[in-house]
Amino acid sequence: MLLESRIKKAAFFAAVDISFKRMKKSPERCARNLMELVISTFPNKIAQTEYANLSQKLLLFCKSNDLQGAHDLFIKTFFEEKS
View 1 (cartoon, helix red, strand yellow):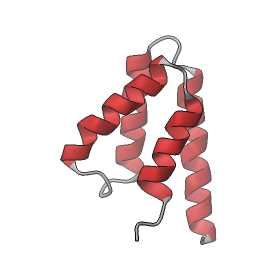
View 2 (spheres, one colour; view 1 turned 30 degrees about the vertical axis):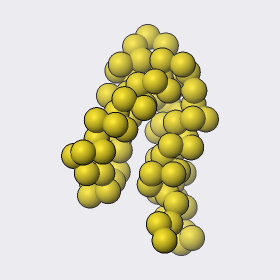
View 3 (cartoon, helix red, strand yellow; view 1 turned 60 degrees about the vertical axis):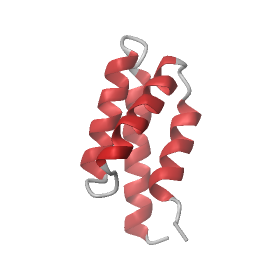
């Protein structure tokens, strides 16, 4: 993994962690902020058909305060090499 890729991944997950710290006030806002983060970080990686599915999964993670689940979802969706 290139250094630039590692830095991008670390910055992305730092932003995810910050969003989760504020999620107790509003899980819906947490999910929306995370989707905005995804769109700005990976503008061409998520298809319109996947958007609603990812958004619903994030909302469930925010409602259950499951930071590890969100991390795993992001790793699977954006950081694993597709073969």
